Amino acid sequence: MAKVYDVPADVLISKLSDILKNEDIPAPSWAPFVKTGSHADKPPQDPDWWHTRCASILRKVYLHGPTGVNALRKGYGGGKAVGNGARNLRYAGGAIVRQAIQGLEKLGYVEKVAGKGRVVSKNGMQKLDRLSTEILSQLISETPQLKVYS
Image (cartoon, rainbow, N blue to C red; front, side):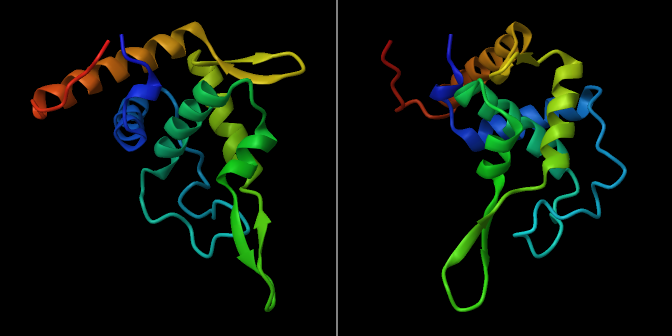
């Protein structure tokens, strides 16, 4: 069985965001208008950016868990030029990360560990591993020269 480490991140996140669109994780009413942080100049141009961010957060919690909201804010943050000096790090918006994690907790994919942060639950791990196996088998069938050593 393939793991999240074995498949390309962009393919996994796009397929997972399509799955999350069909499940009960609604985007907030303010999602079309909000910037993702103080470092951003404009709101995201993709209308389905909320589900993509939720999928990306689920993948990051899988890879780096247990992790907290502030660590995710730092990871999604970016640089903002201030004057003539170097770019300074600005954290991403906390409400976006918090509400995405709360939605994933409601679906049962993420659970809280007291004093440590969030980790992927058993259901979330099964979903991600099955999706990774499906993606890897699809990649192998599309490219016959690709060899997998187990």
